[in-house]
Image 1 (cartoon, each protein chain N blue to C red):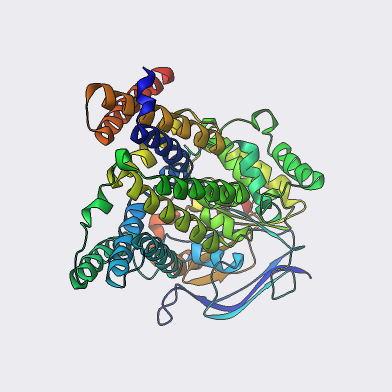
Image 2 (cartoon, chains in turn green, cyan):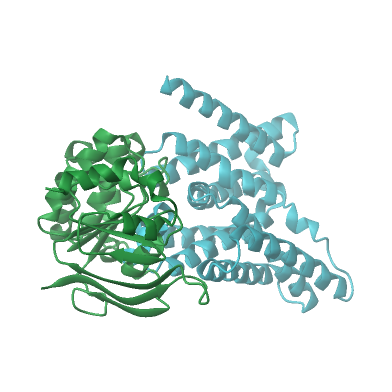
Amino acid sequence: MKYAIELIDISAGYDSSNPIIKDVNISIEENEFLGIIGPNGGGKTTLLKVILGLLEPQSGKVIIGGKSTYSKNYRIGYVPQYSNFDKTYPISVIDVVSMGLISKSVFSKKLSDEDLKSVKNAIERVNLKQKQFDQIGHLSGGEQQRVLIARALATNPKILILDEPTASVDSQTGKSIYELLSELNKEKTIILVSHDIGAISRSVKKIACLNRKLVYHNTKEITKEMLEETYQCPVDLIAHGVPHRVLDHHHH
Amino acid sequence: MLEIFQYDFMVNAMLASILASIACGIIGTYIVIKRLVFLSGGIAHSAYGGIGLGYLLSFNPILGAVGSSILGAVFVSKMRKNRSENEDTLIGIIWAFGMAIGVLFIGLSPGYVPDLMSYLFGNILTVSKTEILLMAFADFIIIFLVILFFKEFRSITFDEEYSKTAGLNVDFYYLILFILIAVTIVLLIKLVGIILVVALLTIPAAISKFFAKSLSQMMFYSILFGLIFTLVGLLFSYYLNLPSGSAIIVLSVFGYFIAYGFKKLSQK
């Protein structure tokens, strides 16, 4: 079995006596579609930062594509929370997507024809060809989210990591984003993070729960124990609604 | 009408306006878009420490100003990187500390010391040829670096965290941007005074942001608006005998509200 990402005994945070995530172990297979849920402040962003190489773990090891270094041919495409950027920024769709290849266009170097083609392909992949020269602020929320996905796709990454991709879009748009992700999952490993159990759709193949510790049973079912361990509050409150639906769909 | 060009000080003032509009249009675009007005103020005021040191050790105060504002820029970008303290707080500290040690150094200097205030409130009508040449040189450097690092600056000001994951040395480019901001402001303060600098850095760029479709367009419009406000403001002040800086600022603010009205109307 080939693993896209392996995390071994990872502890990380900003204060060494009080790590935000502790002893996290997980092996994510290639072409996996993993949903990570957990409460706000439970360490989801910290975990993503460790995987992306933005934050050095306090202990443990990160192995990406079988190597402990970040190599160019095993790129990770990152789709940050869409509320992070300024919607009034004067920039066109194609310029945002080209940012994915920023490290190839430093010192005002022009992108090669091949790179330019990757940018165009990424835009077509998310169905925004007609709007590629529009200013990003003129797009709908769902379209803006797709622009960020295209930017991550511009480098042809093997792994795609998304932070709350459906947090600020309506359910219809959310559905179309999940359809796109399922399509992309045919050739890419996808990791998706959300605080909202209901946001994790049925396109996800496996689910892990994170609240300082990672609970992962290599299944898609969220068990009562997982939720209890993760949210540390009476599960009845949470389990009344959506989680049951997730469970029901897959108890055949 | 053309008699205005017979006065050297008016010709110099117009040259200074053109050079200041170019620098402010470009640098102001980044300041407005990344909301760096307070940071720019802090870095600019840290320059007074260097001015004071210049008087105390008798070297050119402008060199001291450039040096200490660059130190301020380095300090802020280092602290940003470590995230050890709130950025706002740090800016407040270097703002106050820079001015305080400036005044201290001047107090310690022997003999006659000119007014520190002349560095706070420069006057566009008393600009010298040397200052114009210095500013022209700074404009050249700004244009050169912004063309060279255009995509990098755009990427870090649009989405800092993503730029890091894409393999960009974000801290390095922020440092260059902060140094550019620092040097621009310090040279312009001597030229036109800090109040007009703040106005020229923010108002033309804020108006342009209403209409611009790209960053380069925003810079171009900002320079254009800056030129209109400064040159028309100078004409007003000449013919109506008004203080030049205030005339330019009041005109700019009027321009801002007219543009804001247009923007709101066009959205309906």
